[in-house]
Length: 407
Image (tube, rainbow, N blue to C red; front, side, top):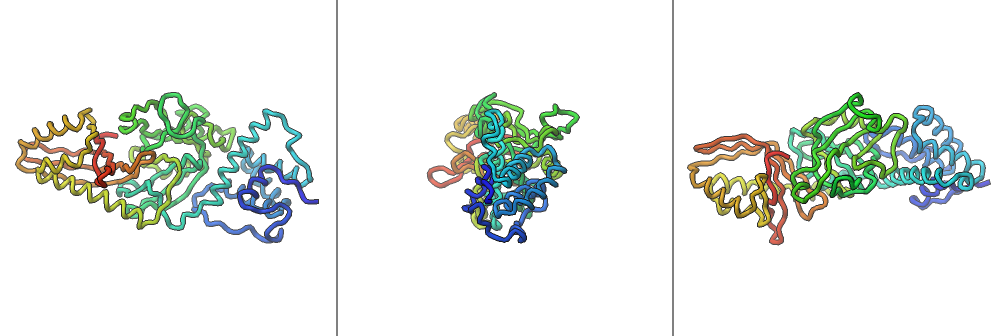
């Protein structure tokens, strides 16, 4: 008898275009090997392999392998659901008439988690491409994190000579209201470029947050300029009674399994590691990324040279008509201030170090740049950490729309 197709396996079949009962290989053959980063979640890899075995018709082996996984991680509810559906399917029955409405809702949430994990497995190859959100990483950033809110995925990248290299990725939960936070209490996860501000261990946290949390600096300067409110956006773990949560179940935080969180935390530098939260990752070739990097760096260098040359007119041309400074000055007030200051300058030297460039998600042709700035003149000197938001204008030029010394 051909086993009935449980909803979970039917879902996998639909994504792959297969047919249950007509496996693509013999039951004794191995599932196709997949290339995974070395830090990828072992539990997820094993679960996806089980679903692949079931798709190929090898129910007995799938159930045996899944039983081992459940013994090791009894709180992995999705694995338990798959196990139950496989047992019922092997018996040639359907589980649907056996469950009530409340159980069906919990099951649907787990199926949504399964779909997210399976979709990623089917479309995970990057073929050497890089996320266009990371244009350049300064040497101080050993790693960077990209949270793909649309596809419930957190990516960890290593910094290789300023270029991101994929190290690992993990399934994630986002806010129950979806992505794009605007206001306090909207249960949405923000879209933007942030950094980790501190680490909280499990002794400092309620059980909801699992083994730890990494708060980020939402709202940043751009969020505040856009009128966005709210606080307490963290990347954190899950209660020890569960392994993972459904795709949209947090109050706005990004949530991953505890073992994944621990792997991630080990590679985070508090106060430094960038966290980009975006609705979908646009994977581009290194050549495409280099084009943006070259354009933005050229604009920044011209801005710096104009400042050093005390060419105030050329310097101010790099500030957009809608520019706002961190002191709240608009373009006119900022221009008046700079003209007054520069009138007293005989020489200016501006050095830039630790330059990072991030394409800002959710904004049209905008990048966020951060760098250490050393300023020297005949009557003043300073060393500051600077953040600027550059946007490409309709005339094709990059201009600064927001600037501050702490973000």
